[in-house]
Image (cartoon, rainbow, N blue to C red):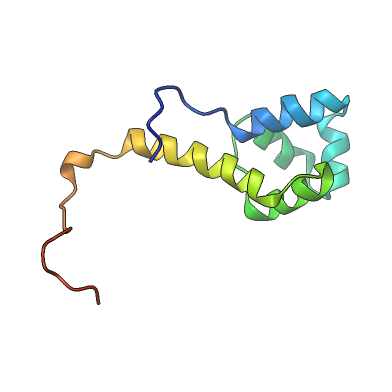
Length: 102
């Protein structure tokens, strides 16, 4: 559970700023190099779509980092938003209830 007040940066923004722009590339060039549609990559870098596990593999190969790096960026972003969305007060607690797992 992330306990930060500020939302984590969308992984697409990190991709755009730290990997695409930093290297003087275009979304079109990177999309072609990854073998994906430009529209799909554009949706990611503009925060309209997330990074799938398959895309994480492609990005790790293209930019020389780990697949887990990209997966973690996406997971942390999604979990932070889920924490804000879920009303924990409405959840029934079962810890210590004596119920055995099935």
